[in-house]
Amino acid sequence: MNEMKSLDNDAYKWMTVPETPARHWCRAFFNTDVDCDIMINNICESFNAWILDARGKPPVTIFEELRVKLMRRIAVRKEKMKGYHGNICPKPKAIIERDKEKAAMDCIATFNGGDIAEVENIEGSKNVVNLVMRTCTCRRWDLTGIPCKHAKSAIYMKREDPDDYVAACYLKKTEDLNEYL
Image (cartoon, rainbow, N blue to C red; front, side, top):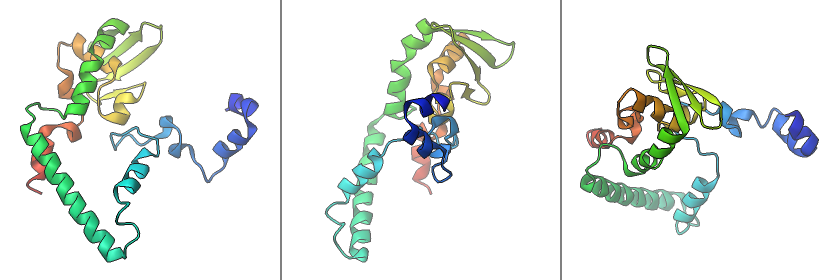
């Protein structure tokens, strides 16, 4: 923060006023219960573009149009997932596959005799991974629910599958359960 103050005093003032607490702008303070680390405004902008046709109408009409749009979207997504044969939704699965090499080449895991490992990166930094708690000190796994490269390194060291460590919200069976709710 002192470095920030020396670079841009206005930014420092904005970051330190009580109206803008760090939990709104800094990943270190994000809630890890939601399995999402997004801190951009694109979701709001996308939603606004999606409802553009309905925005100028009376409230009841807006709600009705949104209800129908959401029903159609849910139906399309449900059909897509019926045709998908993996256990994990496609995007988290792609992230796991993409980072396989990084986990193998960039990280070395050393276990404590249990389910906690110290993972050393190729750059020399170290992170602690707890497989039971599904946490890593880099916090990426905690925030997204998808194992980070440090966690994958530890998981591979145990000869286990990273797919088994993905948050339940990304599992296809969770989608199937929603059918009965």
